[in-house]
Image 1 (cartoon, rainbow over the protein chains, first blue to last red):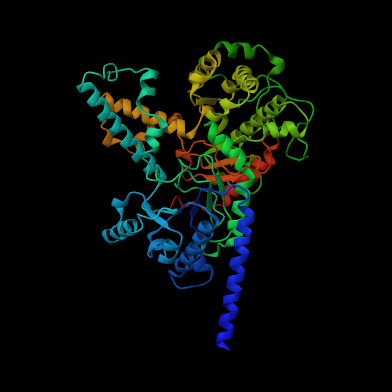
Image 2: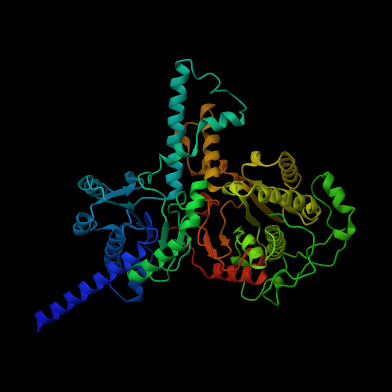
Length: 270
Length: 305
């Protein structure tokens, strides 16, 4: 009896998987987002809502994350970024089966110096172990805020330019580039450009996201990917993070495909 | 977009609403409200044209002007708006695109009036993005002339109603005459305190951060700071929103049902509540604004905690 039940569950699982792959086949006729970012909001509210023990919401949320990663990589999304609000969200590393099956390289983005020693070491180990993978990328934003990322990039750009100008000046070629007092517009333009700042961002290894999904109906970015979200589609389903499923994923993709042509034109122009 | 004083007799809004009647008074001189800043040429010009002058009925201290349900203590200090949908509005009515922009200006005027009445201190509007320079030349030229016309005609209102105008964005790309007008208006209204209207023209969030970075780099070059001194506070001082006491919008409204920020104020929107309205900007009136504010007041803001 038990074996029959297991067999039925297996057949059902295979059917669902086959149906999902069919849907992905149809969807892939349209544009596939290159990068989707997730703000995993709602684990604690889920715990309260279902009257679970403390921390259980995060465990369910972790399973939800694994499912979402599976959908993303199956569909062909190359870059996935997740915002880890609290370190609770990230007590376990992504399952090896997913990382290996889809050739996922794991990157931790943020000010890793703020993490505690064991967490930072675990992060570095995970990054090293998956360094050779190249089919897809999972960026985990931890100890991260976008304003800190931008400020850090600005700081690095200024330091880099300062070094360049110092070298130029010592060789005599930097005349006119350093002056005291007032400045002119041309001088300012020579200093630092958009690309100079972008290459110093923590998220420089990934392209800008095409979709940012934040669960729990909260429509705000909470200091996540502010710089990179300039032209991306923002989707905030009402479900809590542990409740997110294939339906929300499908809805996000369909809406992305609807506006993709216009957004692409905007990006090319800017 | 700056608002125009021309009141259109034909209704521009197709959806009837009991709250869509204009609430400003019949034209008359506000002799009690003397201008608080030096007169500029267009102020004198404005004051001599009695027929065109209309005044707002502004009583921000009167709590009875707040619609039912809105709490004065929970009003956002700074509201930002992406005024999307003007062209679509015109296309839906088989009108030329310029009619859409003009209707958008009327809509802005109404929202400014409502903000003053309901105690919102700052309103930022995304009038023209850095990305908009790629639009058809005729359209861009029309928009520039619309900005110039609007600012000239409404200067009287700004002085009379104690409204401060600030302009953010890369003004060097604008026609010289418009640049001068904007700079003069900013200077002339800088001591006005009732309400601040920040108009973002030729602006983008990326541009704002890059220009702040360039200023900081120059300061480092001049030895005023070290690159390692750069922190969040120094960044904020150099961003163009340093012209206001409330640089971070509490609420961002985008009309026409598009769910994106389109490169508007990226740094400043870190903890801003985003509200996406389905209606097109010319149709976004008091009722829709009320809905947005009620939704805002019901949200729990945790600032990343």
